Image (cartoon, rainbow, N blue to C red; front, side, top):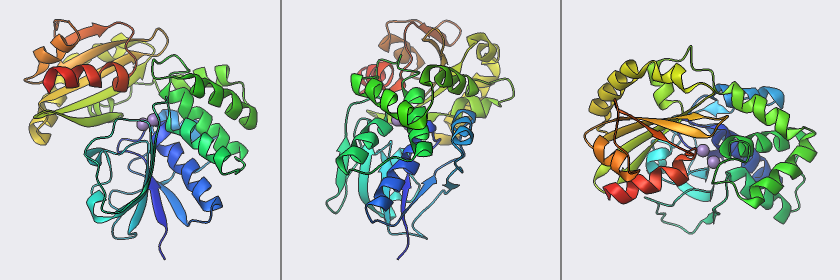
Length: 308
Ligand code: MN
Ligand code: MN
């Protein structure tokens, strides 16, 4: 029988890649035959974590139905964020911390969703519930994911369970999480040698909102102006991709990970409504979003309300 493939969302972030690794490991300990894969290459941040904890990046796939009938999804559920041929395979399990949308299955499945800051916080609970010990390197990867998703516990998505999980995992990994966390976040902020496409799509997702298709990318920086200096180039690329892919709205959230603010670069026919969602007016296609660091909690709900 072929392996059950375990994977996170497209344009994978650290949680998407490492939750596939940790959940696959747990499933294998419980007697399943699974393999973690990814729907894209690791970002620099994720690669930093993989190197630190001596783990190979998962194999990259774009389709799965030619090699398996069954999959497990982590860190996502919406089909437009999943593998291209998701409709051709059976979803056996989902572990996720996002909204549920566009999701239905033919068969019963294991579905674990909790409103915490990171999929790996849920997976830590699953290890405990099943009395499976976490190897040091996997604990380090899970720790990295929580640091990444919660911006070192500063995001409004972060819960007390995430904080507790960071402490427990840091103990197993043998790492001072505050110093490691800063190093990890900084590893993901190099923008100078990225193309406009990489800045826009390195961490981007599509969201259907009413009749609108909205693409929202996010890039973490320590110097916002380094990205904003390239605004003209970014807008040009956003226009081309919106035409090609049919986006009604394309937003890039440029987040300063040190002072926890963001500037949004906004393109599309719904741009003014996007600004209205935040009680803002666009100035040169951008707006400052004070205190905004979470796409999921501080951007998607506001836009969904305005556009639906
Ligand atoms: Mn993710
Ligand atoms: Mn996540």
